Length: 327
Image 1 (cartoon, rainbow, N blue to C red):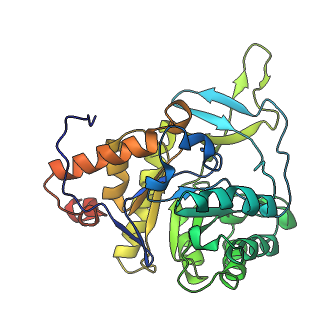
Image 2: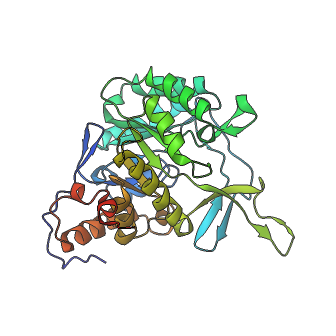
């Protein structure tokens, strides 16, 4: 772990996120740091590469009933239900505050239909605080109510429609990141679909579905039964997804675009795994629940590890594992 006694490194940690320059690769993961105020008591969120908001929907959402969280070995299950105040309140209160402190903001958007995604994007990019927005993260890993609850990211046609409609609302020069689900047969196919539809980058991965049973009461812990599994348990899945998609990009099978790696990152070593697999930037989620400084700390640790391995730029490490892999 990096300490205060460690000499400052000279590594260039900046990231080119589809044309938007970030000073470092560290981000929060959507839904794991509310909309910034709580974490700002522990770290300056404006110093992160970008702060990622909770997923915003068009109208207020109360979320699911309790219990909606459960601890699991090396992780946790959650079934919050995208609780939030709706896009207008988000813009007036949360985006306004993030703008006031100078944060770079990745706004996560969600919807029950493709049209709702587009409407939320429109409200964000046309707001008076739009200058704080560094990117739009399109959370297609949520259910499509118009298609029997099928998750958008599990269906190429639904994914394509969402990204196409959102692209029409987002101004040129503002990156759109498609957040992908690991619960698919071929994540490369979905990545190819959303990139063809206009996504400028990918966020991988969202949580994966799981169920925990209360063996005393002999029923599911969560009121919805299923929940999204996050934490260290899913990190190998995230590394696998990034590896496969980055490999397809390097082989020319799909369009090349930046990848934001997320899933079970607790340390600089965890982050370095994702970077070596092909991620240009890193999100820290579940680890922030017990250590709100984790996004900042992991960034310091990652920088030191890159320096120790003799690199002057983080960009030189992105995807390096593919070059050194000799099957």
